[in-house]
Image (cartoon, rainbow, N blue to C red; front, top):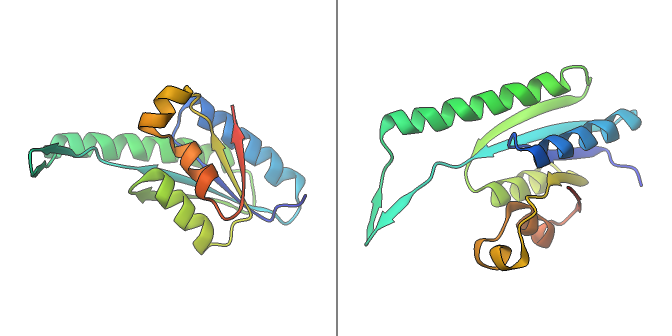
Length: 143
């Protein structure tokens, strides 16, 4: 199967490193394939009673600085690919990945598996599980 528009989800974790390496390999084998690496960060929110508590500015800055470092690492990994780019988004990871893939007609999403057990996944869910269940295109989950 040939993939022309590959979207790789990347958060800097070991599983996402492996997924990005796999996406890079796929992009190199297809002469006209493009690779977009998407990094989605989400600021944690705390709800106490009926109130949403905002994070202090220094914590917001820390999250944003960490996200920028992850993006820079991704940019370094793809710098030699002619049709590759990195997208930096804020929001719910699974929803943002799915929306981006659909809006840009990606024909493959490559994502790392966190390796959650069935019990944890039932309660917590995982980004990769959500993407696999709701994607309208092919998904490759890399362990």
